[in-house]
Length: 407
Image (cartoon, rainbow, N blue to C red; front, side):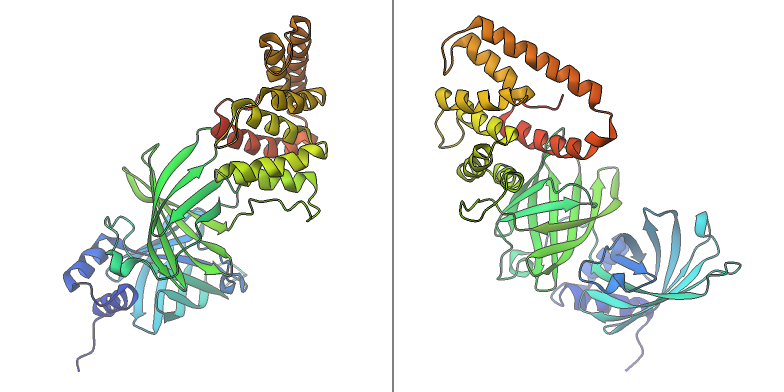
């Protein structure tokens, strides 16, 4: 049997990774569009861990390719020296940028869509080189490839959880994914809330891939990764109409806790956090239960939220001005700015209490002073940690109730 060329070996690997049912012409088209491999490399064993951060993007057209990452603006040149169903060897050369002159050889074992092995770096003139490390990678098809595979090939029999709390790029866990089989929606709670449609087009035991298409903007993304118990982690490739595959990032996800057991002994801070998750996933009754537990313990933010739920009514929770006034008044007397504003309006309109213009004026003045006091202190270092939590809470409340913004 004649020996396969390197390019034929590469196409063979794509067949093995993405299914032999695909037509060879389609595989060649995918390869020419740019086959992508998400890579982690490190000087220790960090890349062999289950939650390894795949923050480097290898893009190949045939046996030649480039490596890009946030840490190095100049792309590295890659050449496949060996790539078959069991092993891979890739040579890297840096011609420019801060690492000009560095070369590396990646030697790994291929198992389905995953690769792991060792890397040998060499950099003439640098005393710490040559040195060795480890790398791991996940093979992807073309990110720009448009249609997801047919349903018969796309989703494994075990569906993903219906709710996933998603964190991106080591930042806040501010995205709520709600899935139903292989489709769903995502909401990112930020100053301008982002909404997207989600499609699960791979859900294998060791590999998942979810496509995101924003409905509030032109951004799309592919989330590739794997499952580790009840946790998910992997790499994101963001795309826009002008920059397909233009940026990469990392993501983690977990099943959110959205209910508070009264017998569990949760403190107020944990009850508020869980209540916030419940709001993010539209579990209004669960949110009310958690926030009420924290409000009863004296938490001003929770008192404000409970009051707001009753003030507006939410889902199957009926509007109740009397209950709203009780909780909002408690929060206002603890200095909550938004509660002070609402209590002033309720006194002025006679909602849940008798009209009282004098008290309406008093609480309006308190709210004004509270805002000025916050503006005077917001740059102080000791408020930084609290400020981050306040911002996230404000984004969730703004999206959930439509009237909140931070100061």
